[in-house]
Image (tube, rainbow, N blue to C red; front, side, top):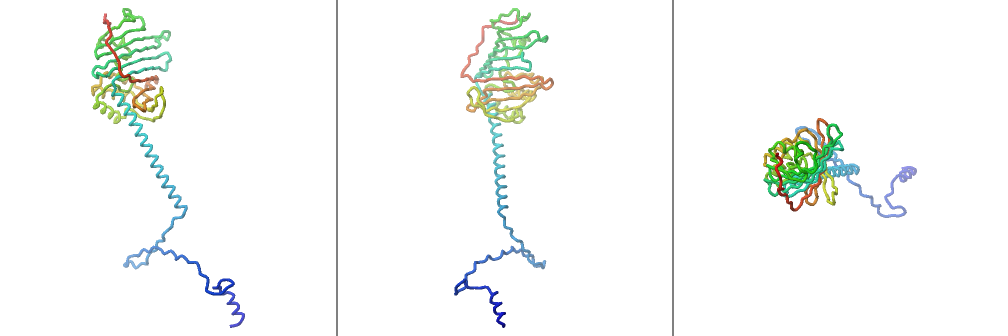
Length: 348
């Protein structure tokens, strides 16, 4: 070997000794064994080599995507569950309040109803004693005013009516138009008239004396037995009499309330009234539902007692688009005294 070749080979050989010293070679860093593929052995009769399936390791980005996806799924499922629970809770609260409205002894209601004609107005104060469900006692004072056909005069009627059973109407006119029908009547005197008499409707044109079970319009009030109540609530749910569109919290007259936004129509209410009458509920109108109309409700329910304390109804007739709004405030006195007045016969 030539000296130049030795020098050349020596300069290319890596040094196994530490720089500037002698002794054992420096330890080398351990090396990772190569990844072994996962073998899949083919059956012998196919005479094929094993198939290697390389195990893929998820990257950090892939792990992040999976984690976020799982989180979104969980949040979405939780949100859907919360929405369903909230919707179900609102429905339960509404039907609980409607059930309570059919399970009471004394109720007082103040009603103001206006129409698209600002000169038409009804205001009423109604009190009902349901302690004898078969013969509920009702007392209503109301004022009705609306323009006459020529719009130059206003019809105005103010009276007090009482019903102590299903046979007799007691009334006392306070303000009324003069007519052959009323010229013999005194404004301070109580009169009585059998409900079977065709004139009874003339002295109670709004039938306020007989609407105590269905005041506010579209709801049912009374001291109704538990079996009938349960059947009516089941009917409301199954026939979708009321469509709940949402709820919110509000304060009314110092009361913390839940306000339920509800829609229905006179056809559904008429069918529910018939169901109630079939179950023996008293004072249900026979001819309700004409003209056809839609009803939009805001029903205030006391959060503490689950009792209805206020109802606002926007009513719109289907054929004529005539609109009216009624607002009813409801209280529950501990007792009422509604007695038969000293009345004269109104039939002359």
